[in-house]
Every structure is written in C-alpha cells, then in structure tokens.
Image: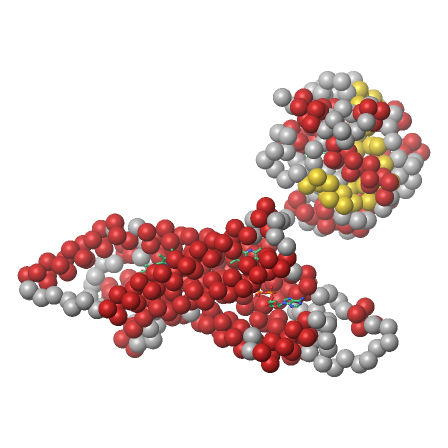
Length: 478
Ligand SMILES: Cc1cc2nc3c(=O)[nH]c(=O)nc-3n(C[C@H](O)[C@H](O)[C@H](O)COP(=O)(O)OP(=O)(O)OC[C@H]3O[C@@H](n4cnc5c(N)ncnc54)[C@H](O)[C@@H]3O)c2cc1C
Ligand SMILES: NC(=O)C1=CN([C@@H]2O[C@H](COP(=O)(O)OP(=O)(O)OC[C@H]3O[C@@H](n4cnc5c(N)ncnc54)[C@H](OP(=O)(O)O)[C@@H]3O)[C@@H](O)[C@H]2O)C=CC1
Ligand code: HEM
Ligand SMILES: [Fe+3]
C-alpha cells in the first residue's frame, strides 16, 4: 500500500534526484521510520551507526556504515540521535564541513537548555549548515502515513540553500514545510511539541472556575434552601436542573468575555489617543485566546440545548404538570390563559434558538477549511458583527427568561439573587460599553486612531514613530 506514496509524487523530483542519497545518523526509532518513508519516496539511504554490524530491524535497501564513512556518502545528514549524545560529532568536524546537518531532536522539558539543540549542534560542528526540521512529526505519524496527525513540518536555518533542500525533502515525503526563518527560531520550534494546548489553558481554567462557582451557588439556592426551609429533599436537581443553569450561564459569561477585551482595547486606545503602544500582557494574551474561549462557550451552549430538549420527558416535570392538573380538577379551578406569559415564554425560547444558530455559525467559520475560503473582511464581519448579535440574542434570551421575576425581591434567597441575574452582569457591561463605542462621535475618533492618527503626535519628518511602535496588536488580530 505504501508504494502509492512513491507514485503520488512522480513530478516533484526528476529521475536524477530520485537517486539522491541521504545519510541518517542513528538507527533508533525515528531514524528507521524516516528511512523507511524516504526509501519509499525514492531516496537512497545510508545509516551512520556506532555498531554497523549489530544494527537490526533496518528497512530493506538501506546501507549501514560507521558514522564517518556514512557521512562521506551524502551532503545531507539527518541527525536522529538525542542531543545528550551529540558529543561524537565533534570528531567528525572535518568530514561534516560544508554539509547540511538536519537537527530533528526534541527535549523533555520546555527551555531545558539555554540554547536550542540546533544552535548547540551548529556550535559543535562550526563548518556545517544546520537546519532544524521534522521534530514536530512523530515516528509513529511517519509510519502511519501522517494521515491522522499533523502534516506540518517547521523548518528553520541560516543557510537558505540548505534550508531549501531540506524543504524539498519534506515536500517529497508528502508533508508540508513551513519556513520559520533563521536558526534563532529553533528554540520556539523545539518548544512547540512540548506544549499542551497553550491557548486552551486560560479558557479551561476559567470555565472550570465558573462551573464550580455557579454549581455551588445553585446548590445553595435550589437544594440547601428548600431543605433548611421545609425539609424537602431536592438533591435530584444536581443531575439536570442545576447543570442546565450552570452550563448556559458559563456559555453566556464566556461569550461575553470573548468580546470584553475588544472593548477594553478600544477604551485604552481612546484614552491613550494612539494605537502605537503595547497593550498590557494580560490583555494581549486574553485577545489571543478569544477563539478558544468562544469555542468552549459554544460547547457549553450545546450542552444547555441538549439538557433543554429532555425537559418534557423528565419525571419531575411530568409529575408536576400531572399533579397541578389533578389539583385544579378536584378544586374545579382553572388558570386563565395569559397572553403575556405566552409571549414571554415563546420569545425567550425563540431568542435562544436564534442565538444558538448564530453561535454555531461562528463556530463553523472558525474551522480552517471554512475560514480559508473567506477573506479577512468577511471573517471579521462574521466574527465581530454576528458575534455581537449572538451576544445580544443570548443576553436577551436570558433577560426575557427572567421576565417578570427579574430583579424582583421575592426571587432573592438568603439575599442571593437568581444565578442568571449574576450571569447577566458581564454581558450587559460589554453591550453597554460597545453601544457607547459605536456612537458616531466616539466611533469616528476610534476609527481615526486605528488608521494611524495620534492625538499627541509630534510632527516627524521621517515617520520615526512608525518604527518605534512595539507591535500593532489589533492588526495582528485581523
Ligand atoms: C464560536 C466562536 C468561534 C470563534 N472563532 C474564532 C476564530 O476562529 N478566530 C478568531 O480570531 N476569533 C474567533 N472567535 C472570537 C471572536 O469572535 C473574534 O475574536 C472577534 O473578531 C472579536 O471581535 P471584536 O469586535 O470584539 O474584536 P476585534 O476584532 O478585535 O475588533 C474590535 C473592533 O475594533 C475594530 N478594529 C480592530 N482592530 C482594528 C484595526 N487594526 N484597525 C481598524 N479597526 C480595528 C473592528 O472594527 C472592531 O469593530 C470565536 C468566537 C466564538 C464565540
Ligand atoms: N521517536 C520520535 O517519535 C521522535 C524523535 N525525535 C528525535 O529524534 C532523535 C532520535 O530519537 P529516537 O530515534 O526515538 O531515539 P532512539 O533512542 O530510539 O535512537 C537514538 C539513536 O541514537 C544513536 N546514538 C548515537 N550515540 C548514542 C549514544 N551515545 N547513546 C545512545 N544512542 C546513541 C543510536 O544509534 P546507533 O546505535 O545506530 O548508533 C540510537 O539508536 C531524538 O533527538 C529525538 O528527540 C524527534 C521527533 C519524534
Ligand atoms: C436552541 C437554543 C436554546 C433553547 C431552546 C433554550 C431554552 C432555554 C430554556 C427552556 C431555559 C429555561 C431552563 C429552565 O427552566 O431551567 C433557558 C435558560 C437559559 N438559557 Fe437558554 N436556550 C437556548 C440557547 C441558549 C444560549 C445559546 C444561551 C447562551 C449562551 C442560553 C442561555 C441561557 C441562560 C443563561 C438561561 C438561564 C439559566 C438559569 O439560570 O436557569 N440559552 N434556555
Ligand atoms: Fe504581544
């Protein structure tokens, strides 16, 4: 089956290149996997090993020599050895002069060494051109055809010719090379596979905090209070009723927190009268994880929708309705139909449905396959304009759900307002500030600032202020 990968790239190499010999130092897991893949793609492979005779399990067709003999056979040498064992390379400095050394190594910890492994290799073998590549691809992914794993290979190096050759190899293997610049980028590339969802950390901890806080808040109001005030056991509410408060509240709060940094940034820019000043770090990082915050919010909103769907089949709900009907029948009493209640009830559900629809639309446009097909204006339109509409609809859904009870003193329990009232605080703050920001007079100033105008700009002759700007954060958000 793997033979097809050879046929899949018949035009990327001409026949003379097909015979290109690549040397791999180290006959370990990664060296063997890479060799197998490269053999399938038409390369000749020479292994360099400490014990050429003892090496086993090597792919058919690969030659095994000593390190120095192998190095003489090729201009490109892939160092499939752990950094700790790079020492032997110093003895090969002469042989390795002018050759391309590909550093594929990873560390166990972020920033384990002061310099990156690739820079360390470049110091050990000064005459060689070191290129960093392949470290984000696992031996397993190479063997499984990289079909179900990341196909991106980050490449960096100081010698552009050497880098291009390595990128050609990457492409021939059916992977996607991403040029990351000079060897200085190696440290970041080496840290990359060691990170565990860095952008998801803040959204994750925040949503965990929100869930725990609102869960206990609801337990006090919905379980402990009825128990203390009448001895009723309402613990079953922990299964559906309380989650169906906690999840939508978390969704609404997180959604508001996606749009809060944008308005804080706008206020900062208005206050400073310029966009050419760094935002504080916390705001910077908050801005950068808005996508993740939004997707977590969408997850919670979906849970809320699922929990809402099961309301009619719940025993507690059916029992309550049946019981009320019987009580009214025996008392020969009937509730009059209330049009205003019908309106309130229908409108809050309708607002919820529309809000959820737009929420899902936001989620869909954030899929790379979709966002790649829209230009940045379209993307911004969906994310920013429709995002605010989503926030307005979801906030209105919650407010109308509160309806007449909203802020009424009778809904206070031990001085605690209903949970959804607390959940409305941040969304309302965001929407009110946003409303002020889009007032024509303020919007005009903000737009000018974002186009580069500065309130206290000293006239400069050479545009010096553009050079001193640290980073244009909002631009990078586009
Ligand atoms: C389900 C879901 C999925 C999401 N997916 C993504 C995603 O895939 N990618 C993503 O980035 N975010 C995503 N988000 C987060 C969020 O929708 C976006 O970050 C959104 O762009 C934020 O809009 P904003 O108006 O608050 O902020 P900003 O886009 O930062 O802008 C604020 C306002 O400032 C103006 N502005 C900003 N910068 C400039 C500038 N340099 N020059 C002139 N005017 C400027 C804009 O007109 C805008 O009105 C997602 C959110 C959700 C809920
Ligand atoms: N495994 C993976 O999925 C990935 C690995 N990498 C990187 O690839 C490199 C190799 O990894 P991997 O193949 O898994 O490791 P292994 O331990 O399986 O192989 C390392 C090889 O290095 C050679 N070597 C040279 N000098 C020494 C020495 N003093 N002590 C021990 N071995 C030595 C050995 O080959 P010989 O006996 O022939 O001399 C050995 O087989 C590492 O830098 C790793 O970070 C990067 C991405 C993914
Ligand atoms: C298909 C879409 C939706 C439907 C049908 C729906 C329906 C409902 C219902 C029936 C309730 C009352 C629950 C109860 O009585 O316990 C409710 C409450 C609520 N909904 Fe929705 N909803 C939807 C989408 C959303 C979305 C997208 C959000 C926000 C992100 C949201 C936020 C809330 C909040 C905060 C509450 C109050 C929770 C409480 O304190 O009890 N809803 N919704
Ligand atoms: Fe920054």
